[in-house]
Each structure stands twice: as C-alpha cells, then as structure tokens.
Image 1 (cartoon, rainbow, N blue to C red):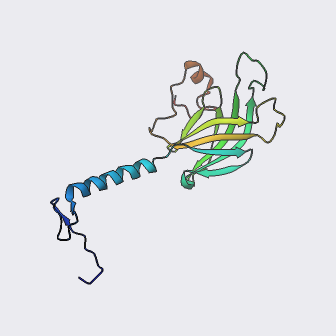
Image 2: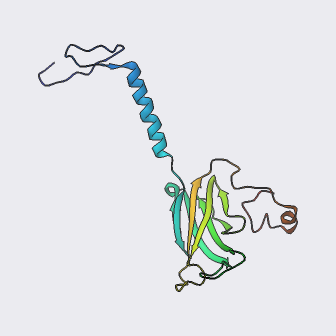
Image 3: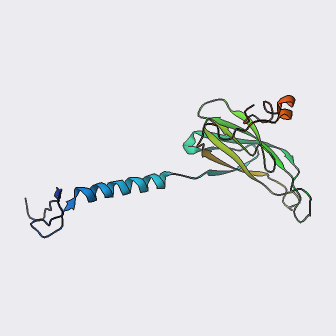
Length: 180
C-alpha cells in the first residue's frame, strides 16, 4: 500500500483495526443498506400529480404515460360567489384521457355529483376544481384542475350502479367509469 492510500476492511467483528479505527460490522452494513432502501422507497412514493388545464389544452402526466385534454364545460350550476344557496351546485367537465398511444377516452366528471373521478388504464383521474367561480368578475378563461394518480386497486373508481342508472343507460353512456 502506498503512502496516502486508505484501506477499508469489512469484517464480522466490531473490533478496531491496526490503525485504531473501528471497522464496519456485517450487521451494521446490512442495517444501513436496509434503511437506505426503505427511505428511497418512501421518497419515490408520490402523491397525486395536479394539472391545470384551459379549454382545449392538453397536458401529459405520470412521466408522459397519461395525457389529459380539457374539452369543455358541460354544465356549471355552482352557487355564485357571495350568494346564499340551498345547494352548492355542480360543475361538470368533459375530458379526453389517453394512456400511452391508445385512443383517447372521453369522460365526464363532476365537482358535486358522481362521478367525481374515473379510472382509466390503471390511473385515477379526479376532478378537483373549476375556476373562475360563477359570479366572479373574471368569467373566462375556464381552468379545470384535475389530479392523476396510479390506482392502488384495479377496481378503484368503480361502483355498483343503481337500478335507475342501469335502466336509463347512464352507466354505459355518460358515466363510463362505472361498472354495471
């Protein structure tokens, strides 16, 4: 060994080496590696990714795997700003969602009614907000906020339809995320 070089020795004991430095033990090395692996896993676990979209605007999420396009505001019956309403109302938006190079799927989501989210290709797309609110001075442009998150369950976003939904066909037509 040349002058200035240092040698690290891994041993199975907690004894000191000939230079008086404590050597690493196999247990401490394994513990350190396990702790680093767990912390790296926690750091990589992400929450939902938020997108703000104007009408006609398209954005990619989930590392480019999911593309969401805000098509239109279907309905906005939310209670206006500074008004007292019996019901908060509902905003309904139409989105085109595509996973990878697959053809886009059109979905309608609501702020106050169901469905508020849909699962497409293992990703949960949730309607969070539509701004500006009715009655605000600035009425346009309409901006929809949606979140995208990898679904934790293959059935996430699905619920059983009521008999009235099945009879009217709403499960299959206007609520494509629902399983009948």
